[in-house]
Image: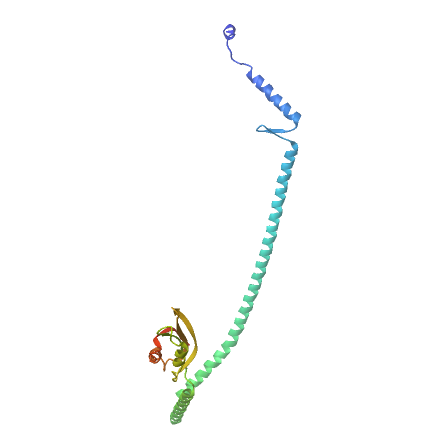
Length: 248
């Protein structure tokens, strides 16, 4: 058997060499007082710095949590105070309601008694003729009051519906005297019509139109009437359009 294994290349003592290498690496690490992570040596100062940084972050987080806790306590205290005030207000309202109910019940009972007395009196018709005379007198008084009210109502000024109208008065050409056109338009005077300001608005090619406003009473003056009256000045006016119409 021994003679057969002489020519074999099997490494029977491999575990001894691996153990020896592991012990050697441990000794080297202890001598250099550091850790080796993926080929990078970490010194004790770096480890201490990381611990201090982690401790600082932990302290900051604790402080933040304490502040949040204080804010929550304040909010809780405010809510408790508001609830206490609300409960006190509800109790006060309940007491007031009870007092009102106690005050109302005697008044209601007294009124019911009076109504019963009135019903009893109505059942006894000792003066039927007097009641008829009183009813006739009441009807007469009522009619007089209605007539007086109608008379006062008739004396009051009724509400008059009015409108604000803006008209566009267009001439035939640019040679038309627009000042004369405005003067002619303002000669139209009738009850329920009040002319307002006017201005010239360019149309094009040197032509300007007269834009004039007026206030009319709806029951008396309409746009058709205004257009018909203004277009009577046919030598100066080509057409009339309603630019705006607003109720007042």
